[in-house]
Length: 308
Ligand SMILES: Nc1nc2c(ncn2[C@@H]2O[C@H](COP(=O)(O)OP(=O)(O)OP(=O)(O)O)[C@@H](O)[C@H]2O)c(=O)[nH]1
Ligand SMILES: [Mg+2]
Image 1 (cartoon, helix red, strand yellow):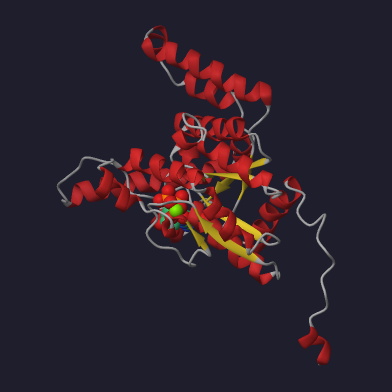
Image 2 (tube, rainbow, N blue to C red):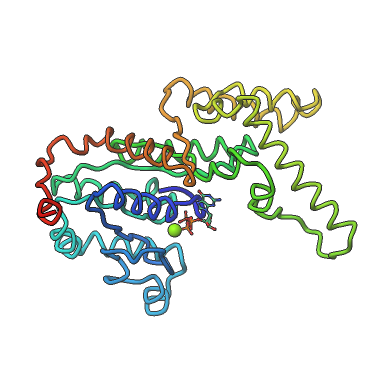
């Protein structure tokens, strides 16, 4: 799970490759009826049951209403999923979920789906992906933390949060990191040289800021959300701003951030998909939280290897 573009599908394909390498029987399940393409074809795919395109065309729904409709349709036809999963019920399934937060909060759709999986005796773990770029903006970062928390609170299943795209801010900061930074949302339409230079300077500043977060060991404050980050943000406001509307918002933000801290519910495991140890570490956390492997039969020796 996680917001749009946070790296959910990349997470799934990375885990899939890693699990296959270590000899685990693993399959991808796609629950996004609007998904377009995958690096690996999903073994089980909601689009075989219903697609968002059909719902929008035939029932005249918009994209968000259509998505809710598709997932409710899945729940109402849960026998289909049971049958599909039936073939793999001893294996490791990775579900790629749609990002829309309303599926977790306003409507109990994902919760009902999880309850159903548990009824079929599956051990499950929720993985919420938030991308490392969020730490550039503290307000955005904390709203991401809150969305992770609401998925967690609503689903009530073992849960871990993953900070994805760490390769963009870790290790080699060289050109790669700079190139991979998403474009700014600026309104400079004209492409003259001065604008281009300004844009490049802004990108450079953002990279330096991210580097500082890493070098100052600031990152820990984001992996384990530190309410003082918001205080730092507050200190940047002038007295006049604090007395006005911005001050009220900051007081509210502060209270919310304190709440996150009081419950110590949210922390993030960093994932750098270019580093095998990092992938393994995330996987071991997931395994641990859903007790994977505790009731597995010992592996039979592989006949082909034995013959050698
Ligand atoms: N550098 C880097 N880029 C990543 C990583 N994970 C994802 N991306 C890029 O981020 C973009 C979005 O990644 P996806 O995996 O499609 O994200 P998603 O959450 O599945 O997106 P939606 O399904 O559209 O919500 C793609 O361009 C990916 O190549 C990562 O770990 N490192
Ligand atoms: Mg995706």
